[in-house]
Amino acid sequence: MSTPLRIGFIPLVDAAALIVAVDKGFAAAEGLDITLVREVSWSNVRDKLNIGLFDAAHLLAPVAIASSLGLGHIKVPIAAPFNLGLNGNAITVSPALHAAIMAEIEGEPLDPMATATALARVVAKRKKSGAEPLTFGMTFPFSTHNYQLRFWMAAGGVDPDEDVRLVVLPPPYMVDSLASGQVDAFCVGAPWNSVAVDLGVGHILHFVSDILVRAVEKVLAVRQNWSEKNPDVLAALVRAASRAAEFIEQPENRAEAAQLLSQPERIGVDAEVIQRTLDGRLKISPDGTMRQSGRYLLVGREGAARPDPVQAAWLYAQMVRWGQTAYSLEALKTAMGVFRPDLYDAALGRAGQAAEAPGAIGAFAGPPFNPDDIAGHLAAFAIRHRQA
Amino acid sequence: MSAESSPKIVIVDESPIRAAILEEGLREAGFTGVVHISEMQSLLAQIFALDPDVILIDLENPSRDVLEQMFQVSRAVRRPIAMFVDQSDAASIQASVEAGVSAYIVDGLKKERIKPILDLCISRFNAFAKLQDELDRTKSALEDRKVIDRAKGILMKVKGLNEDEAYVLLRSTAMREKKKISEIAQSIITASEMLK
Image (cartoon, rainbow over all chains, first blue to last red; front, side, top):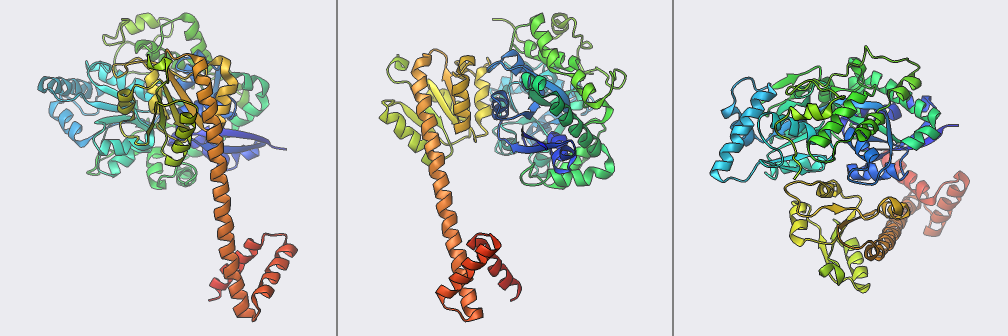
């Protein structure tokens, strides 16, 4: 008899391992009868997971941590035994902002320090001329997109809370908002950056892998108490997702995976666009310029799927840096405890794989991340939230 | 203070009918300060301009994430907002999420003043869902009727039957095949189109 599960997801390419696990039969082979429920907002996914309408969810990694800490909402401890994706976001800017940055840039356009410094000059000039501050779209207050945008611009001298506006936009509205001038730029996951470029309304300025070499993006999230009551079901779910991730990462399977993901009840975007993002080969400019990167979106390769508590610590540090919460050692421990490599290893019958999963965050600016000294680490950054 | 008399309530809903049902219910219950926002562009700016005490939003609305930003202390925020259903209200949050409505309350409004508002919203949302369901069923019944009429016409023409005989044939076939009459009717239409 198979176990019925309801799992919520947002139509984004990094839900791939879940969708393929179901639609390619890996979940059924593990004895799971999964109903995937497509959702319209991260708040819905979080709430339905928290109150038990979902057994598991495709969730922003920082939301899993925020729920466990009771930030922004009710406190529900979450366990994340599997990373659905690393990286995969990009920063896309309007043609006008792109031209303004390129006019100010000294150095390589792919160097985030060069673009951030150029952005600081654009921002300063606008301030002088009395123009409205630039507006940047991101997907959620507790999102990698929020932290990645902030990390990048702050390194160049732009204070994200003082010098520009950061606004939350649902991913499907990003492209329209850029086209209509409501925002000047956004940071979002695939496929929306490619959609903006294809429509000629945006230039991809950076893959987030330019900013952070290795950044956890979405996790497979379950309630911690559910994970304790259903260890075998959870292990089966992790195995199904793992097999799907392995399938997706084989180049010869990409076309089939993209076809499955493109279905209207799944992501509902052209298979060709989805495949580009899986291949890490993106059109970055409306003139057709392509960029290829082996680090654009990692679904399972290079140990991407195994949760790394150091990544959770980095996300927690960003919450502290930007004033979403005050630092405490206890909260740090809770945050790190959300990421569960032990459950991953148990499900896949592997003992620790320290060698395969490098903990490096690999940020382009600031000192190397040290989870044992978050206060000291954050002190190295000039721009951060200050207690009023 | 306005919150002590009648709280200002904003309904964020792209469905004008449901918003009207909700608004009417709230007014009947004595909540006079109700405003409906249906335009999602610059939602935050509209909400800041209205400065409500309570915000109600439909869960099918992607702009719910936009509201979450108001929890965050940032330059754009005038007043922090928190969802009123807290840890102790697990039953309320479950009922509201299942009904498809979410409520946010501006800090400062007493919790017991919100409970009747949310309860009313939940029952109105459920009533609307039932209405929608009935409408869908009526629509599909109408569709079925059309399909059956077309199939009858085909049978009458091809087999030289009168209307009653055509219907009896459809019904007996449906019973034998353990299918709905409309399904048999649809296969007749499909087959006759293929044989054209």
